[in-house]
Length: 191
Image 1 (cartoon, rainbow, N blue to C red):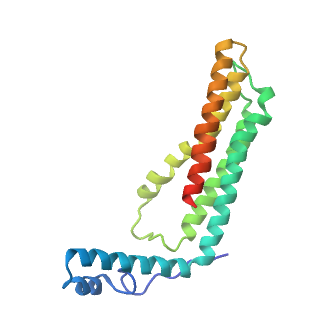
Image 2 (image 1 turned 135 degrees about the horizontal axis):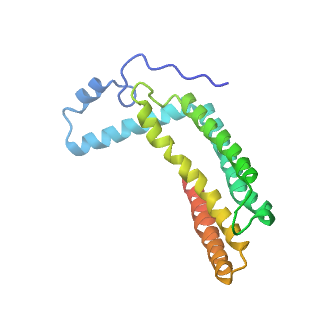
Image 3 (image 1 turned 90 degrees about the vertical axis):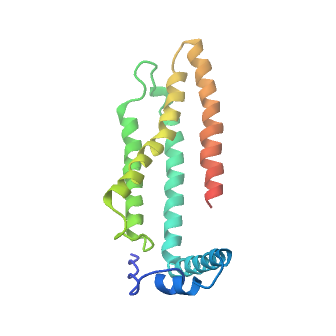
């Protein structure tokens, strides 16, 4: 298990300077030179942190990619595998949703574990409310891809011609909007 890196013994500024040393070094510079120097220090600090935490960052990358692939497979695969069980009036059986809930719980626990292990997070500056305001809304985003896929298969299970037309339109919108733009393009942009 990767241990958390110990906190710095001196107050942290940018690069290897404390906040006071940084302000003192910037006093004689113009505003443009200050901004440029701060950017340079920030880049140096970011690179140093990346080097110090390389093992953790690689582990985090592998875990997140694996969980993302599992999520995509479950969001599309579960409704597809259980499509014969879908009914126009009752949707899917609750057992199908429990399979997704299991992956949801594993993913959210892994996210919390990664957050706790991240030495770049300053827990003394982040309150519980801050974490909850960012973490809890992610539940809705996580469920969205799955519920969109189930809606397509539930509509397809209906005999009504309008429902069949809607199922086709929703399927195309799902493939383009969710599978392509949200999962493919956004995944590529985040890499």
